[in-house]
Amino acid sequence: MTVTETAPGPAMYTAIKDAVYYWSLVTFMVEGCVFRVPGYQFIEGSEYFSEKYKLKDASNDSDADNAVVLEGVTAEGFRTFLKLLFPSHSKSTTLTLIKAEWLTILSLSTLWHFHDLRKLAIEHLDPDMKDPVELVQIGRKAYVPNWVTRGYSGLVLKPEAISEEESEDIGYRSAVRLYIIRHALVQAGLGSVNSRSTDAELTFVETELRDRFHEEYAELRAMQKMHRTDKEFELEESEPGDPNMQDHEGGGQVGETSILPVDEQVADKDKLVQELEYCLEQHRKEEDERREQEQRQEQAQKGRKKRAKAAKKMATQAVQEQVGPAAGQQGASAVATRLHLLFGAVDG
Image (cartoon, rainbow, N blue to C red; front, side, top):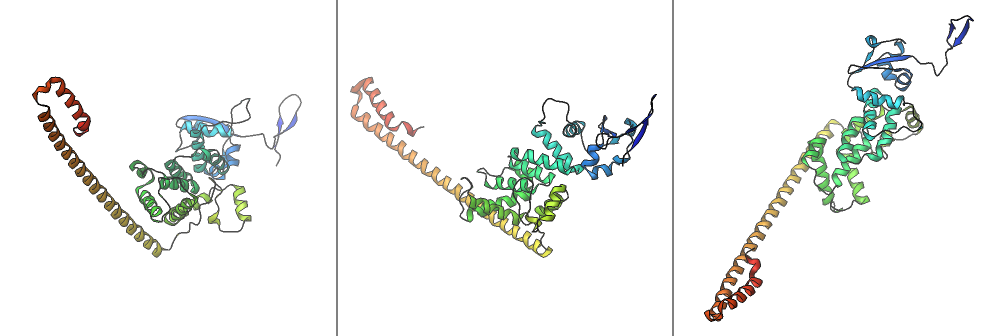
């Protein structure tokens, strides 16, 4: 609907508000800091945010006393969010944000259901998401199943063992499951995790992840679905097939994530406990064998040193008896030098 106003002045005329570029201002209060910006981007960007804070009813001349108070966000974080919504004047047509800023935008756009901005943040962050623990943590918070899968795979296939710090960061139950997958990978004869991962190993690990983390993936998929953009919603509606096989975020697909019936969930937990006990038992056996071998090697080394010392002593006595006191100091030094060359490593 076109809105008109009568403009004051000597010559009265009717002014028409532009349908696009006539915006009402909204005042926000964040950590005691007051922001006043056009409300259009918030209203159009997120129906959830607009309704929650009643932005359509906000007054054009609202001040700090009537500001919309935002909780759970810092002033700096909100300023970063505004940087994307309202880029400051610049000669450049490209907005440049660092990774930390994109992470803030991802967090707030997920929290406030700005689906298009969330998708944009994921696309910008994806190439820079390398650390497995970060992939798991951020993927869980922002509901990006593929990031979680990439993080889990990275932890399973990395040469080093999963550390205590990493286990704490991702959760000890998840770490146990990943250890079981690492063990199963070797038991399947697909090579050691210390070598470069092959396609067969990657496929094996992804299959194991889908099986052991199906409940977590189901929850992530359900939350991810709530944050689809309009285009993604239309695409999924127009493409028949299993929605659980679709993953348009983070590149790739996770696979089926259906929740098992209660009886199967109980059986799955029992199976997990049994496999964990088996892995721990195998680990104890390997540790015992390693310690026994180290002890045998240590005893053998001590025996060799003992025999070498005895041989050195006998050789020294024999040479001294042959040389005798008539050889003098110079002869004795030469003998000592030759003995050192022969047995010098014995005392080391």
